[in-house]
Every structure is written in structure tokens, then in C-alpha cells.
Length: 324
Image 1 (tube, rainbow, N blue to C red):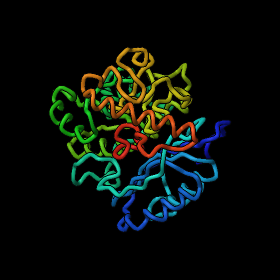
Image 2 (image 1 turned 45 degrees about the vertical axis):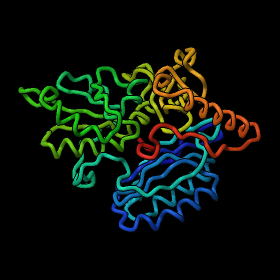
Image 3 (image 1 turned 60 degrees about the horizontal axis):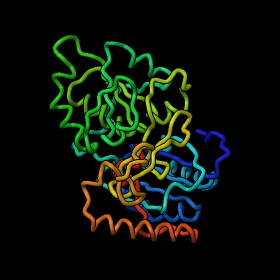
Image 4 (image 1 turned 90 degrees about the vertical axis):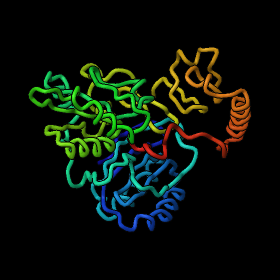
């Protein structure tokens, strides 16, 4: 896929591919070196099951890295969602070795063996408007809080690892005793639904569907006038959230608790940039807030020098869910 044209200076690529990378650790150093040489920052996760991540940089640099990944065994079909940003949305580049490229913690779940039916963004509205379909948001609670599809069920799970237990606990009320409903699921970029649909199929659920390319592809391709999306979509970089057309959203990031912060929250007396927000103020001590305040001061001084402060905080749970 050729990246769409943009007048913004930074290209952002959210990518993943399930592929059997038997010697995945050997790819870490060359990939990290290539990213650094091309001015690319972000996080990439490598595991036996494939690669996942979000990176940003100049057009040429992103193209070089994507081409390199597509040359890895089984990765020629790498799924990439492109967007843009006015400034670099990452502080540094990291390539991490993991047990899973998206953490579900369910042995034997293999999206390469069985997965739900992909639904193109232009066909999604018809599926989720069908009264015989139940719609489940597979993302974490802090993501759902700032935006989701109309009528979607929110599992209120803190992490994706909690999703299987939630489904098993609520299976009866979700599926009922009558004719089995269609189950449609969605996530940020599609990777979590690869596993959640494979999990439901393994649990014996028949008709399971997921949004191809995730919310990001839907927001990019479906006109706002026709959209069933409400709010903004959390993304795993310093943009925090995007809206229709993948334009940058209105949310900030609380660097104390790593939750998205609304415009109204930013007006609260409990909000202090880099120190606290209404959601976490009561969760932190005065000593912790004092430390955060000093860190924020050092970050601002580093920014004035045109540098990235070594203590800069990453977006929420980026090490686990950096691709979505």
C-alpha cells in the first residue's frame, strides 16, 4: 500500500503481521539500527508469532523500514495503516523482544490457523446495524472511554489479557439461548481482533467478524457524514487521539497515570500538566506529585534546548498495545 499524500512533515505507520519468526531475536539489532539511521522512532515488538508496532519519521525513512520488515520471513503481507503528524510523536526508538506481539495470555490461540471473517470498512455499518449482530469493543477501558461505535458493548477491561475471562463470564448473557447472534468485534488497528476472533472461534462461537484495518482504517475511509463512530480514537503515541480523517484529536495525556485527558479535565483544578489529572489525583501522594513536577520541569527545559528528556513518559501500556 502506498502512503496517502500529506502536507505534514512526519509519517506515522501502525503495523503488524502474524508470521512464524523462529529466530526473531536475530532481527532486533538490524531493525533498530535501520530505524535510527533513517530518523525513525517508535516501538516495535518482535515475538515468535510476528511483529507489531507504531513508528514515525520522514517518508523515505518509513518506506525503508517497512520494506525491510516486508522482507522478513512471512512478512510480505505486512498490514500498515499510515497517518501523519505535525511533529515527531515519539521520544525514542525501541525494538523489544516479547512472548506475544499483543498480549492475550491464551496458549494455543493462533490467528494463522483460524480467525474471524474480515469486514471492509465500507461494509461495517451494515453489519453492526443488523439487529442480529452484537458488537464488542475489544480495547481497554481507558481507550473506550474517549470513543467507540454506537451500540458497542464495553467489557471495561483494564488490559487485553482480561478479555478472555470477561467473555467466559458473560458468554450466556451475550449469546443468549435463541439462535446464535453474529459477533462483530473491533480494535484500533486490527491486531487485537486477530486474537479475539480466533479465541471466540476456539470457544465454539460460529459467526465471528472483525473490522479489517481497525478503527484507524474506518476513520480514514468512511466519510464522517456516514460514520457510526462516536468520539475520538486513542492512539499509542504522543498525538493521544485522532478523529475522522485521522486528524489529531483534542485529548492530552496525563503523564502521571498515562490516561487520556479531555478538554474539560484539563480545566479542572486537579489537572496539572505532567503531574496529575482528575482521574489520578487521589491515587498519588504529595511526594509522587513532587517528583512528577520535577520531571515535568526537566522535560520542559530539555524541550527548550531541542532535546528529548531521558525521563519522558511513554503513552499508556505502549509496550503491550503499541499497534492496536
